[in-house]
Length: 136
Length: 189
Image 1: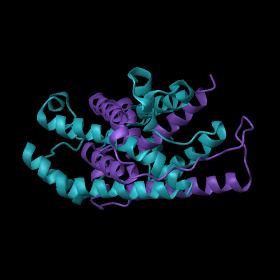
Image 2 (image 1 turned 30 degrees about the horizontal axis):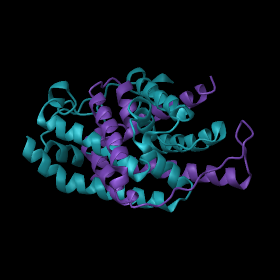
Image 3 (image 1 turned 90 degrees about the horizontal axis):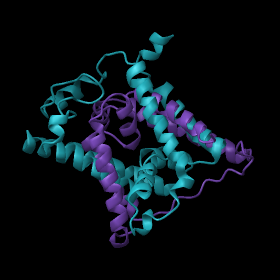
């Protein structure tokens, strides 16, 4: 039951992502061709709101509803952000979606996207398998 | 009211709503926004074998699977219940560029020229959707996150490794769009 709240945040997130067309292959094409401000406006304003919220949470030491201290673990730098980041960007531009939109598009009535999801799972699994051999 | 909700939502409405999910997840459960991790948890649940990266108790991360199930439902709300039936309102320049790739259908959220069952099982579908999807999964896990975990959560918490990741997401995307995409479509059309 305690996971229902995350389901609800997901529903909000997915609805917004879909209604603002961030899940659209066409919008991703437009973004990487710098032909509209739309996607940049979405990501930029999301980061601004997110950053102000995180700053407020830290400043006022806001606790979670379970009265826990909110901690944000730092992300460790690795060569993965460079190599993996480039590979991810290529996939994003080629298939025209990132992971969030893959789930949203399935719900929006595009079952063909299952093929992309299955391929993304295979890619994730392959990374896990090859991880010890890859530069980090 | 419903009619207004059916209009495409402008960036200054949707962007802040997406940003709000960062504090919502933190306050509701000390969770960091991130979507590509769900792919890892799914692999860990179904096919961990002897792979160290997949041998962990994925059940402690089950909230993330509820979150992406919500995104799927949200896709239905936004894409079906609130669908206005109009094509995505992209710029005329983009339409011209995309037509140059041989795309003719501009209805819906994705072009049916590519996203149909027949194409999926051709070389073209295999490369664009199969290999594209593979790179999404492989690259995001290798980078330690995707657009949500690095671009939104990571940048919101001012983490410089996330900035590096986002810069390279764009380098990869630009390389694909401007150099490789014309070659790939030329070869496959």
